[in-house]
Amino acid sequence: MRAFHYSAIKDQKWDSDILRLIAAIYKEAGKQELYLKQRPQDLEKLEEIARIHSTEASNAIEGIVTTNTRIRQLVQEKTTPKNRNEQEIAGYRDVLSIIHENFDAIPITQNHILQLHKILYSHMSNPMAGRTKTVQNYISATHSDGRVETLFTPLAPYETPEALDRICEEYNRVIGNMELEPLIAIPVFIHDFLCIHPFNDGNGRMSRLLTTLLLYRNGFYVGKYISLEAKIAKNKELYYDALAESKTRWHEATENKVPFIKYLLGTILAAYNDFEDRIALVETKLPALEMVRRASKNKIGRFNKQDIRELCPTISDSSIEGALRELVASGELKREGSGKSTYYFRVD
Image (cartoon, rainbow, N blue to C red):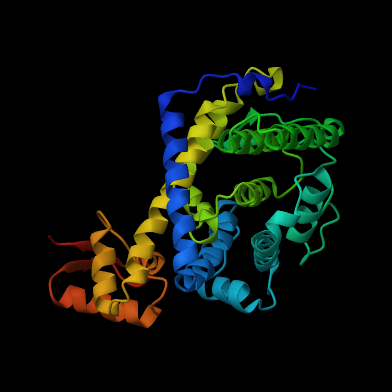
């Protein structure tokens, strides 16, 4: 089994890009903390929308989908799932809720990770829920000609429990002793988790839930109000590319984790920047038309109703639709397509 240790990482000299990202995240986190104290009432709607987006996006990355209406019913009303996809979505919803409400009481241990995995599958019959894998799994790519290529071979089942224990112990040690910057330790942990690939199913979704948990436990709460999963889903090719680049020579413990660290830090910073934009719209208490007008000015190129909904979580869908119609009628926006393929873009 490969060695798990943070000592080499602790002594590593980080390039200016990583240092810049870390400094910018701390700056934005400080601004968010101030806002949370001053205007907590403005954030309830942002939190509600973020939970829906996170549940929808993280499952969609794995091909687990349902309609927008059902996603909202499953997350907001906790309605009963109707099929396998909805059972998986409901499980993600439940784990995310537990993390949001109890993150400070969930230690980073193998036992707690297994418990969260069990809850992920609590709405369906899965004999492997809450248990590490029993068969070797592979990370593969299917080419257009049908050929399947193995990109990476994770640890064997017999190695997995010990490896999961080790990454938890190492992470807790460096965080507890303040030996390593948390914004470095978090992506390192998630990267190792994905390379171990500890479960038969649910590794990707568990990694995103654990990312949220680790960020919350270290005082970075942006995922509560802006969906990190939606950010990843929007550019999932970049996510997979960074992961693949950082996996090379992982078994020999000589991998270069920098691409994945940069990717995750960039995603976190983008979420903080979105938070600031959305708060600017929420706190001004503008009429729906003006909120949608300002939101559209934040978009470059084509955008859809969902993009505006993310920026204007405090107004209803019907108000958004009405405002978009007015902006099209006034010539400020152009509309193209129909139904779910309807897009808008600014004329000026």
